[in-house]
Length: 191
Image (cartoon, rainbow, N blue to C red):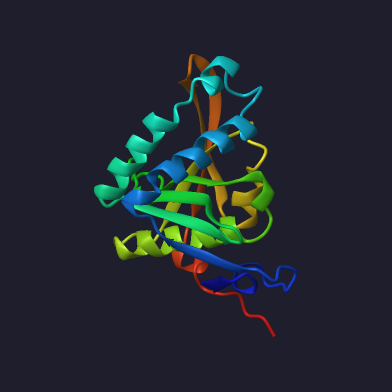
């Protein structure tokens, strides 16, 4: 368990954060967070019929496979009541021209945002990537994503943009790069 102060330098949250490596039994809960977070974050960005068609079963199968294959999947759990409220996945970068490691996903349920869970998941993912020998990392974020500011606040630098097609829709995605993953897991100097 990690105390919230470790991540944001304040005492504004009394709750303890629990971030751990995912287990196969977590796949269905991770899928539920994935579907809920996408339906909350992407209306008006992704087609409504695509968001409605997201399948818990299909997502759970994908996350179960990723966990069993050793992809760096971490979950954040709320303590009361105990349940998974966020997750992140990280692996070696598919495009090494941007960085060595890639934060592939990071989602936290709306009711638990701005409480340190995202930073805790990011720190766990950075530690996982460092364990793979990565010193730098990046994340692709849709330009229209309202949570894009999170990456900027964690020290990531907007490095590239490109247009992709997703669910039949052209979208601009932005590459946010961290030049030193270790800075994401080192606690700030607090008096």
